[in-house]
Length: 143
View (cartoon, rainbow, N blue to C red):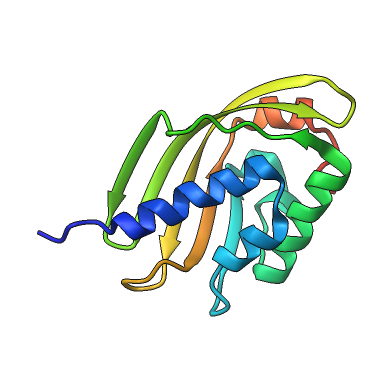
């Protein structure tokens, strides 16, 4: 049996800490330069949301999010649930954040991290969100 990497668990946790801090350059530094992919699910979020994004597009999206949409993210750490295997970690998280208009939001979602083989660079992030809630609370975010 292979023991999951504690360094990978630390990197996934750091990703969430950096989201909470709104630190886009810090997030970018965690992401692999070799074929990184970010995607949202389920498909009911819409085609634009669910389109696969490379590292550059992901960094642009996070930058836009913190400049235009979200004043503050507050992902509860440690996550509610963690499942991990070889080069993969899943977090069930709750984000109690504030939108730019001052309105509070609370959303629970799943983050699945894929890592470079045996490494700590994040090769992929897949986010499973409550599409009805997200589309209602953040209308137009993905367009």
